[in-house]
Each structure stands twice: as C-alpha cells, then as structure tokens.
Amino acid sequence: MSLINKIENLQKKPESIRRRILFVSIIAIMFVIIVVWIFTLNLSLSNNEKNETSYTPFKVFGGLVKDAYNVSLGSIREAVDQLKKQFENNGNGPKE
Image (cartoon, rainbow, N blue to C red; front, side, top):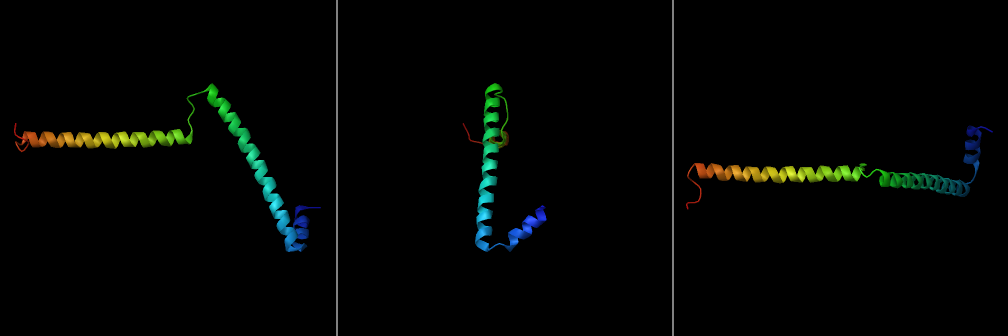
C-alpha cells in the first residue's frame, strides 16, 4: 500500500478517528524530538566539562550586551570629560 492510498483511506474515516490519529501522531513525533533534544543536551553538557571555552548563544549575546554597555558608558564618560575640558579652556568653567 502506498502513502497516497493510506492518506485516501484516512480521509474516508470519521472525523473523531482522524483526530485521534492526529493526536497520537503529534505525541509520537514530540516524543522523538524530546528524546533527540535530551540526547544532544547530554552530549553538549559532557563536552562543556571537557572544553570550558565553548560558546553558547546566550554567552555570545551576553558578551555583546556587556560590550555595548561598556562602550556606551565609556563614550559618555569621555564626552563629559571633553566637555569639562572645553569649558575649563574657555574660562567658562568653575572658578577656584
């Protein structure tokens, strides 16, 4: 029996049976996906113990956020320092 014939036979069945087949199929597929995910998670955790310099998407994103924060904070400080120097050079700064 070919796949086309099986699909045609499934289309002829009542809706309640088709829904049961759908739910059983979804559960079976999700079980396979979860098993594969857990297996790859176990492999990645064992690799992390061996190699501590591995990069995960969250580590990379966290590093980007930290760098952007440091660059913006450093730029703001530098700009404020330059403004202070400009005011001091023009004689508009605080008098001591």
